[in-house]
Image (cartoon, rainbow, N blue to C red; front, side, top):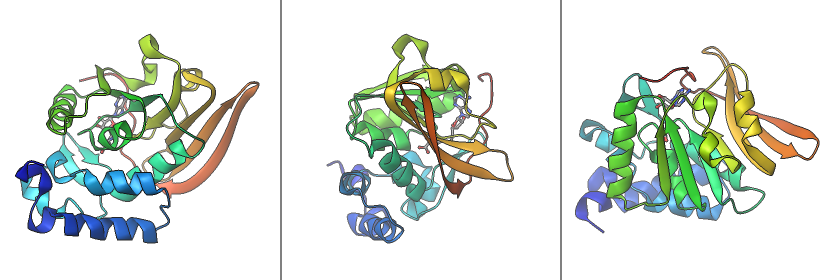
Length: 219
Ligand code: SAH
């Protein structure tokens, strides 16, 4: 691996292994998810000034009022999404700097990721190219409209919190498809897992979470 990707000191494999121990202690059990997080450099997704904090289990700023999600939440949402089996096509709403997409793309067939802030999308594309991850497609758009050209999807992951689950995204799921989504406002949010059934949707309410808001339009 390139030295920059491999990391040294606070970005070394040893530091990353401590994060993996912490994630297991917090209840992440999917070994494939842990392995992918362990081998994926997170420091390339943040500003160099934050490199030394990249393997702390915390969200960090990425500019434009947005954050890179906390590793625990990335691991948890990925595990919830994959629990019922392999997914070929997965839609992500909220590319951000691309970290969640990087983890997912190593565990599913193809990731279709939508971001409303163009400079963040550009950052993500650069980051994911550096990691040579190629099974990812990008769209600059308001994710509230999903990505009709490629729908339906086997899985959908939403990384910003809308006040209610967008109808279009529900309609973007195949029968048997799974969506993991935070729902709420800036005071209180919960994580939901939705599975599309032949005759409707089953919805599980999971833990309290704290995401940036799901906004409409693009910039
Ligand atoms: N998946 C990212 C999380 C980034 S934060 C990670 O791995 O760290 C959430 C992102 O969702 C922000 O970049 C924000 O701009 C984006 N977002 C918010 N509302 C959106 C919408 N309606 N459509 C697309 N992206 C949206």
